[in-house]
Image (cartoon, rainbow, N blue to C red; front, top):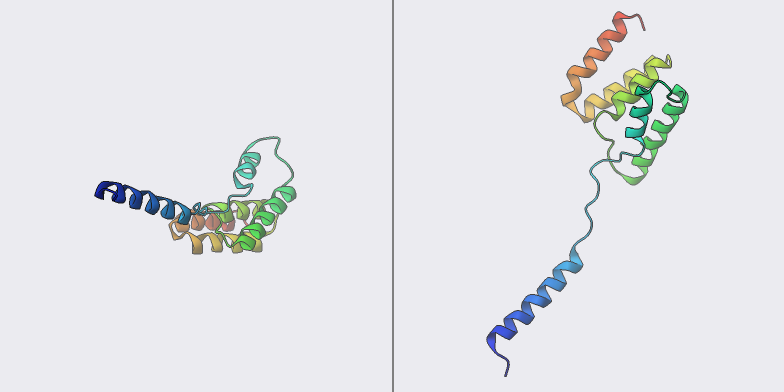
Length: 122
């Protein structure tokens, strides 16, 4: 007959194996895609054309929507700046409204951007 400690040890090992099989990799909170690369490119003097950056960011939005993940903080705000610089003010305002909706803590910054845009006649 097995000792009580051997039975407990066997049960603990079986439980550990069972629980290990149930663990799945955590899903990312946000879909970053090429966002960080696009911001870096935007800030560099030798950055690609605005339209290229816009297309890349829009592609990232579609990828996130396809996988059901959220865009990270600042994504829509940056896309709005790209739209504004390309003369697409309606799209800039829409992107900024989305940023405020998803991240209410960005309201003050987005309101500042909109105010500046109106002040500069865009």
